[in-house]
Length: 150
Length: 309
Image 1 (cartoon, rainbow over the protein chains, first blue to last red):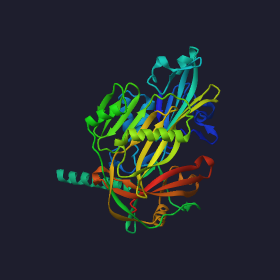
Image 2: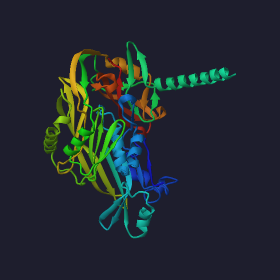
Image 3: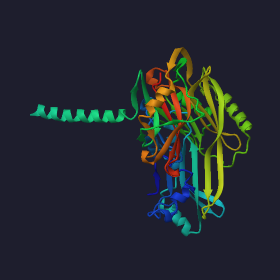
């Protein structure tokens, strides 16, 4: 599995219990299965929410579900960041003035000081561009965390 | 024999249908006096908490109130409007897809548009943002945003006063090095506007996102025209509070909750679905703070309650 969407409240909270998102999710010592659930190993992109995720009791507003919108975007070859960004914003009825925050946690590949690839982009899932391959070939892996207002 | 089978399977289906309808209805709707309060939004996978909900000391609890009865006319968009927007939002080499409810536009330059045919939302996003911290002052950001309001005036809500609400951080981009140390954090900024009909806050959201140079990288609006046709009376929040204590959707297990407190209550007029004929209805937007038995269960969230007319 290269990436996963967790449409759950606060699952990618920037900081919780004095731990940053990457300390909670990319730390094999804190999770029994951490070695598989890390950006450096098998799972390179995690998508979810910093804030509470909200569902609307107004299905007749004409807004498709987040899952459906995300799938539409992915099928249209948007990247993961763009797909989740659009899905979260589109699925929110425009009258809801509350600001929620969606989030994405991913690996970034560096050649020296230059970022050459971030795994929120379209290259996720390509075995020839796997972070492990890059690490083996002298590149540096850094972690990226992005959030945005919804 | 065939008729018996039909009756047998029909009965099972009817029972299942009733069970499903009750399970959907019970958590969200409750009869109370003349009102029919309803949670319009709730946290994903919410639990139901029945118990005491304190009201914070500084909360202004709304009493029974008369408000203008508002309606709106929404503009329906077709492909020619979308082509005009592509030009207005300067999207290069657009790929346009038509879905049943909206048009999706994606440009080669990373700019995209979602345009709802019923006019309920126009959403513009520029994905490729030069990530640098916004060092412009709040006043400068507001000035840039106001210029964009003028530029895109034809897409703004009509018949309402548009007032500045706030300037907030929006897109955050963090880089963490191999040792787990934060190397860089960048933000874009949101300039948020509120819409008012006379003194009544109308839930029409208007947002402009700016990058470090003041370029517009996000825009969200709904271009309806608001009109007044009468008055409505809104239930006091006291009644709603009593109803909330019978079953509040909460994002954490009630077993982990130490206390629940209302931190703010805002009265807003919300537009209803297009199928309702373009009417607004009042709703309470309630800010809730949960204190957990452990800090990890602490949580702030907002819940919208309708059916208060």
